[in-house]
Image (spheres, rainbow, N blue to C red):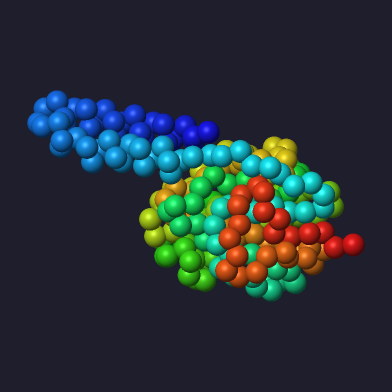
Amino acid sequence: MIVADGIYYALGLAAGGAAVSYLTRPGFGIPLFILALFCLWFFRDPDRAIPAGPVAVSPADGKVVAVASENGGTRVSIFLNIFDVHVNRSPIAGTIKSVKYQTGKFLVASREAASTENEMNTVVVEGDGTTVEFKQIAGLIARRIVFWKKPGDAVERGQRVGLIKFGSRVDVRFGPEWEVAVVEGQRVSAGSSVIAKRKG
């Protein structure tokens, strides 16, 4: 599958490449055709096998850059480079309780300061007696955060909920009822990698 945005970008670039080739020389349009293919690849959206049980899955593809104690719980930070799939998924099943967007900086997303200073979208999901918060955080190159759901919407674990374009970060905050199942440096996949398990 490909996110619709990628198809639109690819069509626009391909049309530009065709126009440049027609008006100048055929070879001059090649860079635009290459960019069109890159957009189709970048906006890929593969299906994932969603694990069952009392677990939370990764909301993003990428590398775990931090596992930190925070406000009585634990924060897991995942850095997405430009080569990762950028579609985000809900870590748990439940109801979207709130969606809060805030403006901010565009620091390199792998930096710790990005968790608090960058432009971001904070989403709270409540379900099965627990609440999990995750943040879509823009990066140095990423300049647009997309979220397809609204407060009150029901979501399934691993369901597609949005994306961040061109390099970014996602932070997930778990309460004390969760045991984190990943470590720094680990690679995770959205929807299919278990990043925390319910205690008890």
